[in-house]
Image (cartoon, rainbow, N blue to C red):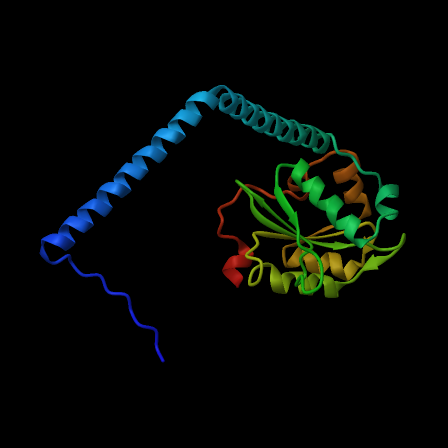
Length: 226
């Protein structure tokens, strides 16, 4: 069985109207009494409430100041960031990707690490106000390891269609094969080998200066080719 619906109807007749008026008046009186009681409590407790409000404001201001100070110190640390080749060689893949991200932030790029399973040939993606978007594929190798042309093919294939990049670069702490460097140069896939990595990370040269990434519109070669 369905539940019966509660239906309200207007009072009928003088007795019902009088009863409804009495109930309404009683409700108003009760509300007025409650408001008066609350006001009386607040009137007595306002010093304590004021203290609590000021305390909450002070705690909030302290947290904001601490956050801003931490960000300033982090920005200062990144501004002076230098990483040696020996430090790169001692990293694992994840640490290498995070280090490249931090270097890009140092250079003025809004960088984030995206590497992992299904990253589609992008470990770090960075955006710059004037230079657009760069996709970085990180290849951490053992000392003396070489990166081949297949990595260049993969980066070229996803930079525009998948990541909407203006620039693409492969970075390694090792070296590249001649074919990989030549193919990258022909197809605008930049490469950073051990020597260029030293100039970028140790000497402090910005990546866009090292690779000659000029200011350009957001419509890039990779996007047009997509």
